[in-house]
Length: 68
Image (cartoon, rainbow, N blue to C red):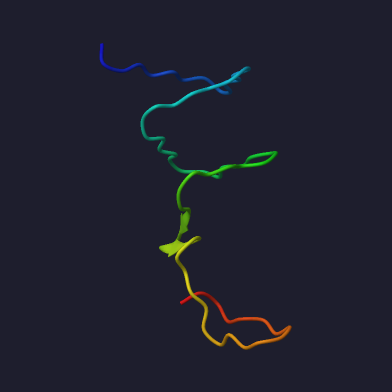
């Protein structure tokens, strides 16, 4: 078979897990505890973490507007 389906009320994995392809999460909420490291960009609702820009930038201790 080219795939398996594992269905259970809860699945616990202990030890290291390596995924060499894409990971898709369906409906629901994803929660993580601890540090998260990403090699690359993170996009949330179409806003890039590394490439987004802010309007209203002024020198000093002010704050910026939301990403554009």
